[in-house]
Image (cartoon, rainbow, N blue to C red):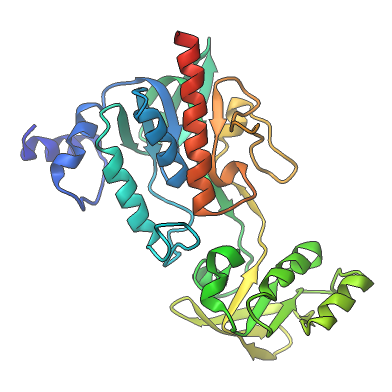
Amino acid sequence: MIRRAVIKTFAISGIAITVQNPLWNFSKYVYKMNKTDFDVVIIGGSYAGLSAAMALGRSLKKTLVIDAGKPCNAQTPHAHNFLSQDGSKPGEILKIGKEQLAAYNSVTYHYGFVVNAKKTNAIFSVTTDNEKVFTAKKIIIATGIKDLLPNIQGFSSCWGISVIHCPYCHGYEYKNKKTAIIANGDRAFHLASLVNNLTNNSTIITMGKNNFSDEELKKLKQHNIKINEKEIETIVHTNGQLEKIEFKDGSSENYDCAYADVPFKQSTNIAEQLGCKLTENGHIEVNPMQKTTVDGVYACGDNSSRLRALSSAVYTGNLAGAMLNNELTQENF
């Protein structure tokens, strides 16, 4: 397919992409776009989805990855605690993953957002927001989760940069810094114990009366971890880097970073559409092999694990792909 034809094909489909690689890297995706029958459709093409696709692609399973290009860590400047990629930009890791998958003719990539999925007579069909319909024998849900950020001015601009969720992913970069922990109760106490390994200058901001037991209060005092029960009005920052926290009573205090415990929801309702059971915490329920409660449906990544890290997403994606490949292979053997 010549360059002009490739560009024309993308123009007709209405798909907008940023070409960062030589155009021939994408030619096979255009050529196979009309195919609708696959062994596996993977919904979500971030770290977990691409990892699952590699396991399946290397086993010659016809695999379609559908992704809208909106990873939850898009704002995070660097990934950490992932061997061989420590300090890399998340977008660069995704780019390398897609380039490597392009070597496998059994894997197809489609840019889009899945809005509907159903199972009819053991065959799955998925429909995207651009009205493409694809069918498959099996499904992997790798759609991640959506953080429900508080309505605090400046919070969303700092999220993933200097207001962070995980000491393992980002804590080393803020060692020995003045640190806030925006949480309460058991979660705050747990975070405080981990953060205490990294700095001796931390304050728990409970945003209301604290929910600590007498024993927990004694332990926090023992480690000189302060408690502030004031409600936050604004997080003052420059380009996402926290500078100070302003409270509703008019007071303020300077901080270098903050950990925050925020609720989440599934990024899509695809799991519910397919009838997959959710846990009490809101994750997709899976067994140790990443299989959901619905036959033929697997899940991987943040949507089904409390271990919210890039390395965990890659691992569970690889496991889901391998286990699903085994399931397909045994059915056909």
